[in-house]
Image (cartoon, rainbow, N blue to C red; front, side, top):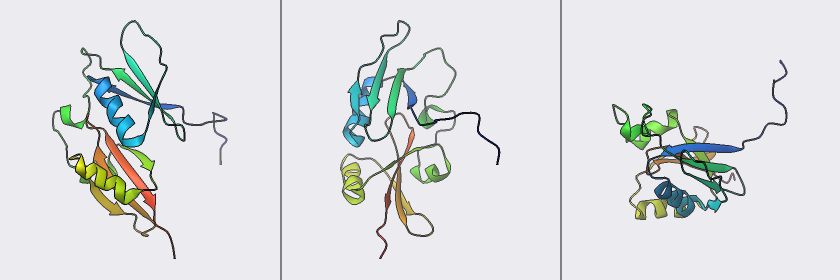
Length: 145
């Protein structure tokens, strides 16, 4: 096995571009418990930085209106809004310990999910979208007997 080029690697942050970074920040704070942290004051665009102390930072960046990139699946030329496509699509996964009550909270908020388990049955999964159409997954290990 070849040695990697990088050493001491860990996840620092994930960034998401949005036309409404406040709405997206509120979603991640309410759903996953991210905390807003100090962020730089860029002259060209606004940002909101969020931190999930047990995991990583999420950097929300004001969308460049002159960009040709789709903002998310809902703004692409052929929208894909069915969460059943997410197991094979781009998504971020969070592990939660309160899987059933978490899903109930999503349902109460009107957030559609697609649920399944890994083939070996050891992990339950639920897939859904954030307000900008970014794919999300929550996973919960199933206690083995």
